[in-house]
Every structure is written in structure tokens, then in C-alpha cells.
Length: 259
Image (cartoon, rainbow, N blue to C red; front, side, top):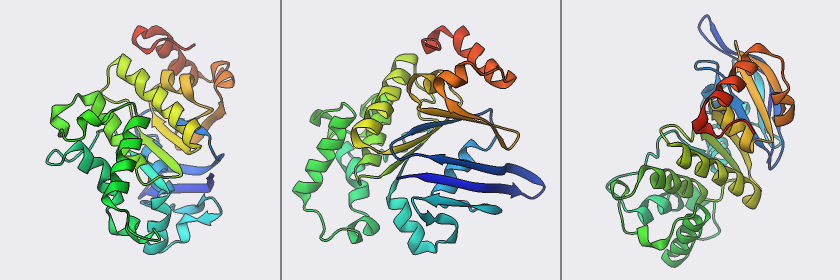
């Protein structure tokens, strides 16, 4: 499913966060949105799912103009989108099985089905999604505090995948992770995007992650698109801010370098 921003401007009072921003994400593409803090990266994600509406301009999911939808229409669009947050945001009082199956029991999801899923079908889906993120059935009855933080991040991703979204949105998915876990999460984003043929938008400040798995990289600066290019083109960029990002990546041994 495609995503398209058509001359989107978003202002809060006198401050403009996005200024005449236009871009398209192709079906099955992995697009990284990079920029310094406060440059509109997370605001961009919120526009995709209709949490925010532009001051001017339009946002399309497929052929649907999200900016014109009522609550019911937005609910349908949001069921097509899976959001992965900075923190795992798991419910500590529930087991891993209950956390991953949570989205399969919501009234909105159940109404979208021809019939409610049986408990056996829910269990099969939970196990299948955990396997996609390289986790096994031995953790089903554990609770989030009983597994590592890196595993919690993967469980959070499995929970997002359970309702079979067509678009995956990642908000700083490697925040708080060590270099090994960061690499693992990056590889999961790549694997899942290709295997499930979903469209992925990853908001990040980490150029190394983007260079490793992105199809294209969009760089925001001063409310506008500074660059939107493939990884090889970004590496050749002479734009000072992009060169700064690249230099930081090359200098940081924990990132694995800008290969």
C-alpha cells in the first residue's frame, strides 16, 4: 500500500513544523525519515494515521485521502497500519501471549472479520508472529519483566504484526538498545518488510541504520525536505547536514560503520 504527502504544511501557532512537504512511499518500500530533534519526523508519522491533520495539503493511504475521513474511516485506515513505538509499551500484568493477542480481540478488529477468531486460531496467529521475530513458545506464559528489553521490543513488534497490517510505522525503534540488539532490530525490519511485502516508514536519527536497510532516505530540516534519495545517492551527497550525519556514523565504532 502506498503513502503520499501532497504539499503538506503543519503549523502550531507561529511555528511551522512541516512546510509544503511532498513525497511518496511505494508499496513494499522501506523509507527512513531522518533529521535532528524537532524537525517534524514524528509529526510526519502522526499524519499518516490521521492523529494529526495538516494545516494545508493532503495525505493519501493508497487512493484514500486521510485528511477527509471521519472517525469510522480513520479507524479503517488505522487497522491497515501497525505502529512500533520507541518503548515496547507492553502490559506488565499480562503474559506475552495476552500481549501479542491483544489486538486480535479489539472490537474494531473483530468487526472487520467475517467471524470472530477461535482461541485456537488466535494462538496459532500469536505463535506465527512470534516466530517471525525469532521468538519461541517458551515465553508465552512469561510476563514482560521476565524477559530482556531486547526481547520485549521484539514482542512489541509481534503484537503489531498480529492483525496483519499493510503498513508498518516505526518511531525510533532502536532507542535504548545496544549495538547488537540494534542490528537485530534493523534486520527484522528488513526481513519483515520483504517477507510480508509491507510498506515501512522508519523515523530515526540513526544514519547507520538507514544506510544498512533503507530503500530510500528522506532528510527533514527546517520544516522542509532537505533530501530524498537512495542510499548510494545519500552517501555521495555534498549537503553539509547529511555529511555531518555520515561523519558521525563513520566515527562511531558501535554502529558498524557506513558500509
